[in-house]
Image (cartoon, rainbow, N blue to C red; front, side):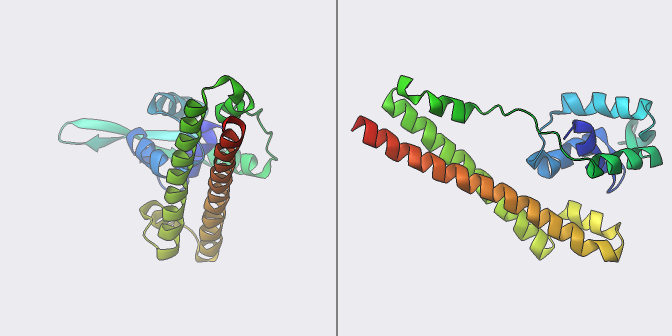
Length: 193
C-alpha cells in the first residue's frame, strides 16, 4: 500500500486539509499504514500536481488560510484501480523475529525483557483493535460515521463489515505475536535454567 492510497482512503470520505489528514491518519488508516506528516504534505502536493487531487484555499483562524483537498474523478479512478489490482507483497523486515533467530547471543535476562516488551506492545495493539471494533459496532466512530453519512445506504453494511474484518485480522496478528513471545519466554527458561 502506498501513502497515496492511504490518503485516498481518507479523502474519499470528505475533503480535508493536510492537518486534518494527519490527525485522521493517526486514528484510522495509520493503524495499517504509518506515515509522518513530513511525508503526507509532499505527497498531497504530488497528487495535486498529477491531477488526482484538487486543492483550494479555505479560511483558517482570523487571518490565516489552509489548503483543503478534494479527490478528482481521475483520483477516484486511480484509487479504484489500486483496489482492483492484486497486491505485490514486499519482502519482510521484522527486527523482533530477526533478533529471535540469534537469541543465543543475548543475555537471557535481556532476551526475556525483549520478549516481555513484545508482549506488552502487542497487548496494547490488541486493546486498540478491540476498541476500534467496539466503536464500529456501537456507532461511536466519528470518522466512520462521516463516511457512512456520505455513502449510499446499500453500501453501509459492507463498509462496517470490512472495517470489522480488517481489525479482526489485526487482532489475530497481535494474538499470534503474544503467543509466540510467551513460547519464547518458556524456551529461554528451558535453555538457560
